Every structure is written in structure tokens, then in C-alpha cells.
Amino acid sequence: MALATKEKARATPGAFALADERQTITWGELEPILNRAVNALVAKPGLQRVAVFAQNSAEAAVAYLAAMHAGVSSVPANFHFTADELAYILRDSGAKIVFAGPETAAAAKAAADQVGGVEVVAWRSPPTAGVTAWDAWLAAASDAEPPTDRPPQPHLHYTSGTTGRPKGVETPPTLWPRKATVREFVELLQAQTPAEHAPSLVVSPLYHTSPLRSLRALAGGAPMVLMSRFDAERVLQTIDRYRIASTVMVPTHFQRLLALPEEVRRKYDVSSLALVYHTGAACPVDVKRAMIAWFGPVFVEAYGGTESGAVCTITSQEWLQKPGSVGCAKPPFELVVVGEDGERLGANRPGQLYFRDTTGRGIIYHNDEAKTRAAHLEPGVFTLGEVGYFDDDGYLFITDRVSDMIVSGGVNIYPAETEQVLLQHPKVADAAVVGAPNAEMGEEVKALVVPKDLKDPPTAEELDQFCRERLAGYKRPRTYDIVEDIGRNAMGKVNKRELRRRYWPTERTIG
Image 1: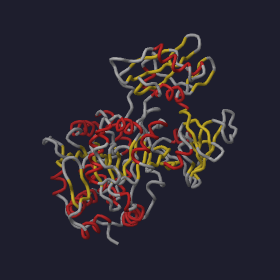
Image 2: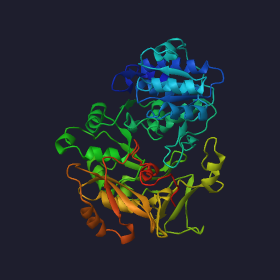
Image 3: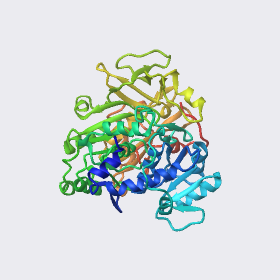
């Protein structure tokens, strides 16, 4: 069997394979480009890893695809990194090539100079000494069919750093099945790519784990459209124009879509959508209900981590019966809830969440055996750092992260419940709750509130009365700060450690 891109190039050479805001590439055009990129990587003796440090673009997608087909591990690097942050990733991963766009070429070159022995290949960037132009790099390689007998290598992702310095983790086997050859791997991707889920739309940065699902679907023969940044109306335009069938989003995207005026939302046809996979952060119940009412029951929510892949999933139909749940554990994972004394807890009893990987693998942090050990209760039984419980039917409900816990007067307080109440206030657009110093109690609950209208923010008295009606006293914030932003990243997560730093004189571990 030919590889998927070659099959498509022969069967439908004029059909679109890959599009971004600047260009559309057909299957017939993609094949020789990809062949050259793969051959350029294969020609590098001993090359094991390359980094992709760029905004979403067709070239970035080709770089990832080329690494996949060349049996080289790609390292998705956050394009917001400084040169020093990228240099850390390059050193830790051992990447010897870094692909960059015009917006990141200078930082990539500076990082490569720090590390030494790293080649920078950049597209659409002004000529720079020591940087290889993408077009020249491709032109120097053959467009002949590359070898397909090399073993495929998973991505090496770096965690967001919300609980410490970024650590590398390979794409787990649930997302990247281990196969002996690239040919076998791509054939599996073809079999796993349902026709009804094509084409796909990528609205989040490819340096995150979930959007790379669409890249693997592209390798399996499903066309893909890339957006360099999220714009709510343009997302709807793109879904309508390309008849998009699947995408990956986070709750922040839903909130921005729902904020569009009704007349704008009605302009675009979204009936082509068959699957909206969402992850990254907890989705407010009212937001998800509104999205299901608009897009239909096409949502599948996934709970998990970069380290593990999805450990739980829930369909729209299930969620409507169990609002707020993230679903049931999916094979090969089994849920284990552990109390403070180590007791295994039953239904409706909150505790720290662990997952038993029945394959015995668990999760593995690159170059960090201590962190790997610390994440495991026992071999193959790991935690992602969350607190929650399962109901009588086995559906999991997340209540908070262990690392976000506030200890006030010896009482453990988890911020998620308070945040969810604040988000219901009509004047609140977003909120985060952290622990702040309190001379008597050790810590107190502080709320950072983003108002819907900065010119008319809610008063502390309004917010306190609202919370007083909905929360027990010890859960209510003692102080409220009105802020413009709480720093959600592209996947909707908040760096609580960074927020706490504003209030504590030195960094500390809470809880």
C-alpha cells in the first residue's frame, strides 16, 4: 500500500490537502514537497530530533509531517518562547535542527547559537547569516520517493510549566502507537481516520498535543486547514467555506464564539461539523449547553494530560445526562481515587485522582527519573495532580488540582468551586482564585476577576454578596482584585503559580 499522501496525489491530485491563510496546497503539490523534506532529514546522519518553533502555517505542518515520515522525533516548541527558553528545550531534547517562521527566526538563531551544533531552517524570513532558507533547503534535496522502513518516532512534547520548569514527555502509545516502520504507522493512521471527520480545522497552536491529532489525520489522508490565530468570526467563515467536519477547541474558544452577536452567528453554516473534540480546561456548564444547542451533539470532551493522552472521554449525549463530568476512564486506564491516608475511596468520595495504566507503562518524563517516580503511586499508577470523585455510574468529576490547594487555618480549600461561582456573575468574564498571605490564617482566598466591561466592573461588595449566597464562608474570597487578564494560555489553562507570585515575596509551594 502506498503512503496516504502518495495515494491521494495519484487519485485526486487537484484536491486540496493543506491550507492556511496564505496558500492552498493540493495533494499533487504536497507529495514532491514532502518527499524533498523527508529526504533532507534522512540525509542527516544520526539525526534523532528536530524542533518546530513557529506559528501555525502550511510549512510548519510539512516540517512535522517530514519528521514523522523520516523516522525523526519532532519537538513542538511554543513560539512565544524567548531565545533562552528555546535554548533550554534544544539542549534537553537534543534537537539538531530547528524549523522557524518569520516571526521566530531571530530567536531561533539566538537559541541555536547558545546551544551550538543546531541548524536553523526558516521560511519567509529575511536572509540572515547562519539561517538556511526553507526553499533552498527543500531544493537541495531529492523529490524521489523516500524510504519507508525506518521506525517512526513520537513527538517529544514539553509540558506547559504551570507546575514547574517544562519537562519533556513523548507522545504516549494511546496517541502514537509504536510500530516497526513508517509504512506500518501511516497505514494505521489511514485506518484510524474516518472519512466523516475530514477535512479538519486547526485553531490552536500546533505546539499543543491535541491539535496534532489533525496532523496525524493529514498523514492518514484527511485534508487540513490551519489558522495562525483564533478569530471567532473567521473560524465560522472557515467552517462554512471548507465544510469543516472536525476540529479541536478549548472552552475559551467556545466563550468567544458565543460572544459573537446573534446576527453574525446566523450568517454561517456549521452543519458540516461531525466532531468537536475539546480539552485543555474545565468548561462551564452553561457554556457547553449553549454550544451543544448551537453546533449540535458533536462534542467529545477529553480529560488527560500531555503525559498520558486522554484518560477519560465523554460524548455530548452522555454529558447532557451527567453535566460537569469528564466521563469514564477509557482503556487502557482505570481510575483510582486515593484519600489523604492512602485509602482507596469509593463512589462520591473526593480524593486525589490516580490512573492505573494496565499496560504497565504509566507516564515517563524525559531526563527526569525523580519526577517520573513522584508522579506514581506504584508502578503503572500515576497522577496528573487533580482532585475529584466518581459517581455511582463511574463518571468522573474534577474538583481541582492538588497544586492549587489553599490551606487557611488548617482547612484545605480548592479554588475551582469558587471560580465557577464567580463565572456565573453577570459582570464577570473570567476569574482565578489563589491563596494570598494572611498573618493569622497562613493563607486567605483571593479572587482575580476580569470584568466583562472594564469601565463598569463589579464592586467587591457585589461579588461578596453573590458568593455569600452560593458558597460556604470558608470558600468565599476575602479580597477581590479587578484585572484585565489572568493569563490563560492558548489551551485555556491558567498558571496559578505565576498569579500567586504577585502576592508572595518569594516563590513557595502551597499545600
